[in-house]
Length: 200
Image 1 (cartoon, helix red, strand yellow):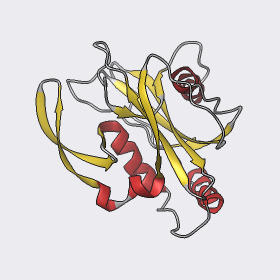
Image 2: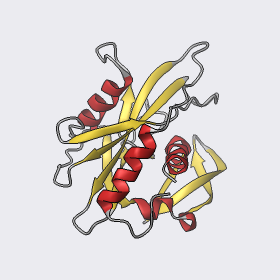
Image 3: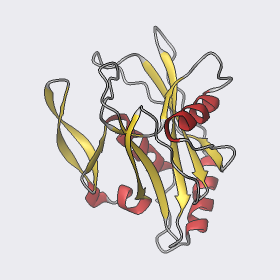
């Protein structure tokens, strides 16, 4: 985890160094699948903290992650030259942030490929980026809400607990992170846990 008591700029420098030293693990590309990318976006606050952006996905019948807390991102399109381009485009479409114009892409995390019958056959590559503190969010119709959360609060062990999740007419116990009434679980929780391991 990032160093307690360090300045926000020092913490971001540590995160940058850790990501540059990390070789992302790629998922197997057997069978049928499509690719997607998401953005884990960090910013330095005026009170010397580091925050992370989350969205709440709009409720839509055609979205298997409908209504969940997530990271900006989406499906790769033929016009995208790379999955990094996908993350940049989808972030701009969903929340209006220009990752290359107003920030820096620091690197990629390990890919995820959930193999569950209730989910589409997707491979997700997360990218970590920083954005300037003054960059404004402009939500789209795909995003019901958004919030910034302190990185320390999200990675605090006290925020993590097994939680009863009701999804697709079924109740299941899943690992989750709790922050101010928000429940972060599923692939987003898995991405955050891998991010935490890398930046220790």
